[in-house]
Image 1 (tube, rainbow, N blue to C red):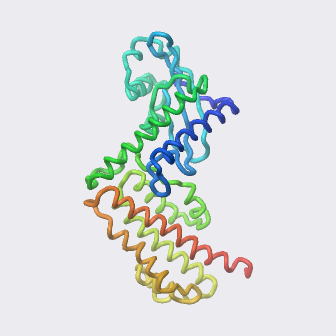
Image 2: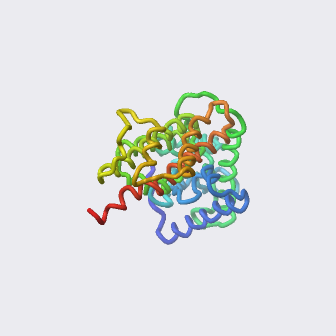
Image 3: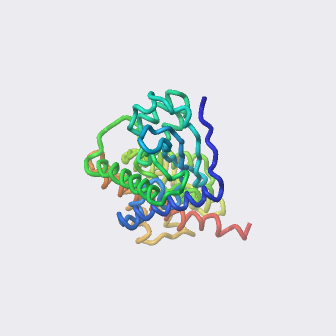
Length: 322
């Protein structure tokens, strides 16, 4: 029978989630001194959310027998703590023979105490058997857990970035980078174009799985699509911004039409847009992982900037007139 997870009592849950998050961010920001785009290494940095799970289990040790198999998954909505009691189900030699956290999770799955779907979404770096975190809010234990979680996330990305990216089947099973979705939700909701949203989400999926070449190629197409949407918005307001684009507009023709009224991009603005497109062509399977990631970060930032600088004007400028 599958264990039932319940939200931790509101006050205690809020206290614990805030404590854990504070320790997590302290490790990221004050120990590793990471900021900005470097925070994509970490699942719980910036505005990203997680669900913290604690499964009470029997631990066969002298001096105490209660512990928690603890882990986290990403969340699109909120930070929260979910608890389940599997003490009776794990009070046996079959479970106790395992000391490795992954083996314990596999045992819980094999006994159908937790679902395969949940186990596949576990952030590997977060997995740990803890004592005193959920039943006593032990600050020392909580900090040790968060430090280990952050350290493992950092270590997992080092190996990715230190060598050329091998050609492998898509997707990878373990996510090592975490785009701050909150940063892009406003853009996708404002544009409200189903095709663009689907294209962009696929790029984020490639990014999260370190498929830099796929990500860069897709982001190049997204940028072309975004520029076309901007030009279409102006055309709907009577401007001649679609003339000469043809059936299958290229990046060059799209940029050329951005020079027209009423957009009138200048030379510096044009160079910036071309720079973002050039980043797409610079990503290679033979670049180091770090170099390719930086180029994808540049493209993500570029798309966000072009949205803020050009898309918003293409719709907001004429709202009052309508």
